[in-house]
Image (tube, rainbow, N blue to C red; front, side, top):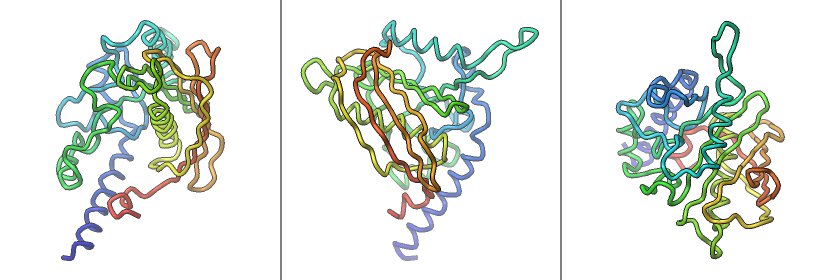
Length: 258
């Protein structure tokens, strides 16, 4: 077997595995509920599925000791809307859903350990690669499928400094790409960023908590257009605004470089 044939076979195997993951994204993440009863779980997300894990991973979207009181307040606000009380005291799914977040994807999924060794066994999502809580990217995403909106509560740690006392523009761009990309994936399935246009309006103070909100503009075939803004938590200050274009992809192309 030639080297190119081997890569194509690997790509097809990965494509079949991830297609199977997509079909299971509506399963309830029971393990996440047991570890944090107040947290709600999404119907679909690009991260690995807790119900498929062979051992318990860390969900980085859950509160930790580094979260500020403002971040906890906002987390409780949106998390309380993940379930609403129905008739006779029963609960049902609310308008918002929290998206769990892990520092790896394939490695924790059934069968993924083998693929992760083939691709890059030490690969990690870099926004979740800092061990010290609160040092860099602290964030949690909630999605509202009916309104086609996504909101991220983001707290920037000291390792993200750019201008003295403020967050580096590249870190802000990273979070915008992360939020809009996740939102586009919820709306359209696997996607890749085709264009990201960012306008910086006001610097974000280091250590502060801000809201990153995205909304669907339109979908045209393989194209998903998203708008995004970064604001203070009370909405009084606009820090950044952006537009993004994502293209739906066949995941097997990732290994073939196509």
